[in-house]
Amino acid sequence: MKETYNLNEISVMCDLSTRTLRNYLNQGLLKGNKIDGAWAFTLQDIEQFLKEPFVKESIRIKRNSKVLYFLADRDRKNDQSCTIIDRKVTVTQGNELSDFFCELMKEAEGVEFSYDYSKGNCRIILTGDHDQIRKIMKAYYDSRFCM
Image 1 (cartoon, rainbow, N blue to C red):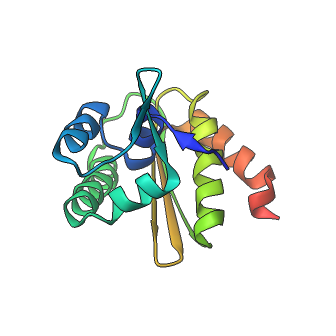
Image 2 (cartoon, helix red, strand yellow; image 1 turned 45 degrees about the horizontal axis):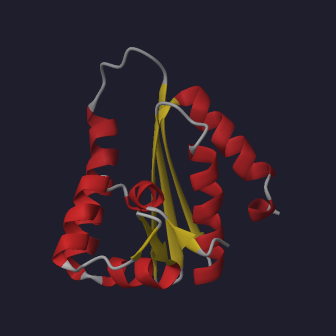
Image 3 (cartoon, helix red, strand yellow; image 1 turned 90 degrees about the vertical axis):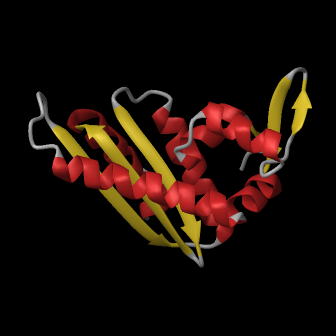
């Protein structure tokens, strides 16, 4: 598991723009440290941030709208997929799973990813290019997380 996360990684995990995250930093909702001019966040910083009611609701709305938008759009020009994975995991397992998908997303084009952990359950949502999601899901099913 990683020691710290940068703003872009939190953006991918939470499905919030870096601009929104910077606003949360200015408001004091997100706390971290600047290291060599770049923001760095510990797992504890992120967990505290995700406990904020306003933040939780913002993320929930964004995730739900992603799935609803996918369902509503019936005029696609290429093959698209929406995949939702729900897993019963510990906090540590959930963090490892999030790190795993964040790494896969670095190579994926045309795919959006979101992750949520609450009360022993994690939810991963992937939407976008069908072939890219198929590759991600193959890596997931071939990983230690599915053994």
